Image (cartoon, rainbow, N blue to C red; front, side, top):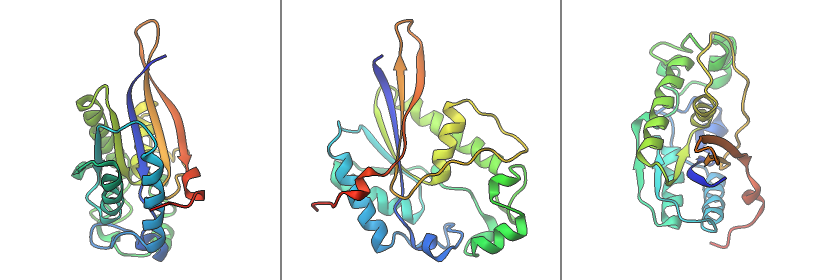
Length: 215
């Protein structure tokens, strides 16, 4: 079946807030670590071996901006920042350590998807609704193209909710393991009946991290 539209999501490299165990909202995220920058470089080198992408999007947070800058330089693409691709709005949890936030909440944000993890935070269901709508908008805008997004792990979870047509729930959904600088690929196939079907071609692909970059 021919592929029409392709959506490729590259999770950001390791960030300083990740290694510190902090909730990395807009006030706290200071960008990638040295290891994270190396991961982004290896990811970029991997993507230069593929057919050209038509567009590159990123969230406004520093760790995705850093990752997108590396990808854009290698792929000769200008990164477009879409504020609606930001991760979960953490409210007053921004900058606090995840262990204490999860202990107080009773689990990760997805555990009670209809409740916010802190004051002024989004619920997981609200986040999914926002991000599903954003992804659907970008897919429609770039129909027939190869779309690359420097993404958060939560954004990748939202693609599963959107393209597998999963609905909001009041119970914790199954988790999805997504490593730093990993690739997730969705392809829209058109079959002989003229039907368009989204298919997951790869997830948590990190084979490029085992190969030294030549940059």
